[in-house]
Image 1 (spheres, rainbow, N blue to C red):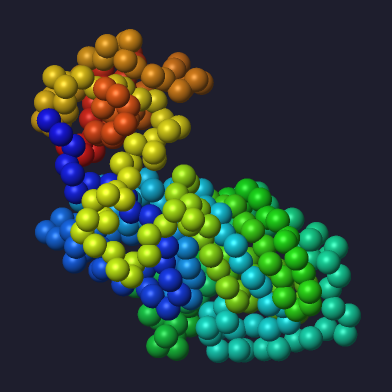
Image 2: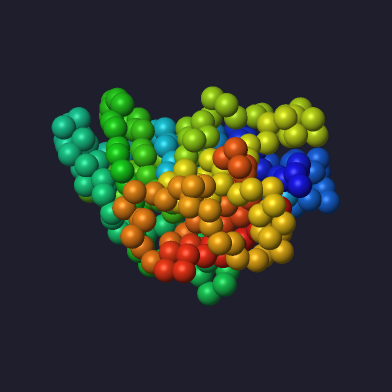
Length: 305
């Protein structure tokens, strides 16, 4: 039994002034009646990697959203806006008598590395009482968003010439680069906003390999589809035989052949852990599930074939 052909992720290099939904619509028209959806919004002004899931891969969007990301951004200090980026209405301009030195900027950037509390921008896709924050903000309603934990793994200051700086940020899911620009400005007592943003990578997907949505065809989609097995490299895996694939399709549990069970070191002692069912050659993801090693038994939960 073959894995569904219209199935996988497309790495799209989103151009500026195109919404993430616009990109999905381009793909959707080419793959219908199959579903399509993106794995992590990029603001209209931003460019770079936008992962679009196709077919049953849409069931894996939440998994793809957890991939670490790398951004290249430029910030402008001494100015604030209601959107925390250059597209919004300027709310304040503050040029200090003594502009921050590069050493000060570098020191304050280091404060954002680690697991930090971050308040998303008022103009963001975060839901407030079931409604997107940006919808409330556009109506002029006050939006109070709670801080939340996000992971920032690394920030490199590439260059700084007042009032502009360029940074490369490696971070986890849910991190708003606009918020870092805003909060950096507050730490430097002058305000700040984001002027440009490129998502250089999302997990193994790089912007240099991204497809342009202009001129994309059904043939391009088929040739460029990436199997989501790349999303489970850090999970324990079970190489499924052709006969066992029939059990998977029916959602039935498997008694594993230990010779085909690949447990991640450090997790082998866990009684219950997540498991990825892959093809016998390891090149295709078939299902996600749980492994109960006290029996042992493998139970599929999300079946993709």
